[in-house]
Length: 232
Length: 80
Image (cartoon, rainbow over all chains, first blue to last red; front, top):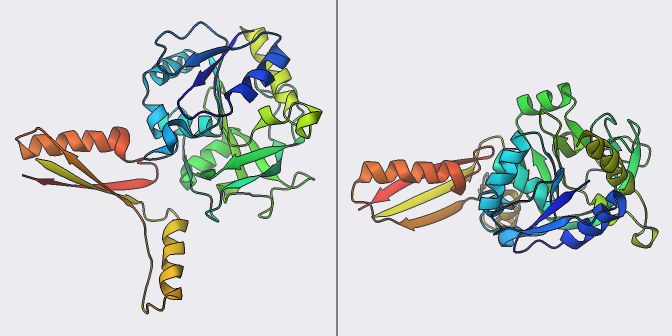
C-alpha cells in the first residue's frame, strides 16, 4: 500500500507521519513537496501537522490554495483516501473537503498534552484497527483546534455518523473538562460524506511507539493498512 | 485604485480574542465597554480603473481566500 505525505513550508510533523505510516504499511511513503506538480498514484494522501505558510491569514488558508491541493481535491473526489492531521485538518476545512472551521482555542492558549479520544465507529477504511467506542490516548499540540460549525452542520455530522473521534475522559465520557480547546460537541475529528476523507486535530502519529509514551495511535495506522490497502 | 476589506467574525461565532481584549480594557479602568469583536483589515492596491469591476473582483477574492465564510463576514470599500 502506497501513501504520499504532502510537505509545505512550515510543516513539522511530516517525518513523524512518515515513520508511523512506514511502520504499519511496510512501505516508506512518498514525500511530496508542495511545488511538485505531479502527485504519484497512491492509495492514501496525508496532510501532516505543522504551521504551513506560518499560519498566515488563517491556519491552513494558504496551503488550501496551493497547486498541489487542487490535485489532492481531485483525487479525493475520485475516491482516494485522504488523512489530515492537525494543520492537515485545518487545510481540509479551508479547501471545503470537510465542513466547519478550526478556530482559536477557547482559552487562547497553545495546548500541548495527551488527550483521550473516543472512536465513534470502527467500520470505516481508517478505523478498522479499533472497536466502536474504544478510547485511545495520544497528544494534541495546537493553537487553533476549536472546531466550529453551525448547528445544522453539526446535526448532519452526528446524524450521518461522520464524527470520527471525540475528546473524552479515560472512561469515554465526552466531558467539558476533557475538551482541550472548546470544540463544539467535543469533536476532535470528522469524515466527509463518502468517508474517504478524515481530518483530526490530535496526533496519532506521535503515539505509535512505547518510547513516545504509548501506542494509542498505532491501531489507526494498522487499520488503514488493512482497510485502505484491501480496497486499493 | 485601492480596496479596503474588513473581515469580521459572524454574529453567533464566539470570539475569545475579542472577549480577552474587552476584559483587558476593563482591567485598565475603561468604563462602559460592551462586547468587543476583533477582526482583520486588509488593503489591496489594484490596477483596475472601474470601481464596479474592482468591487466584483475583490468580492471574488474574499470568497476564495480573504475570508472563511463559514465563520467570517466581509465588507469592501473601493477608493479611487
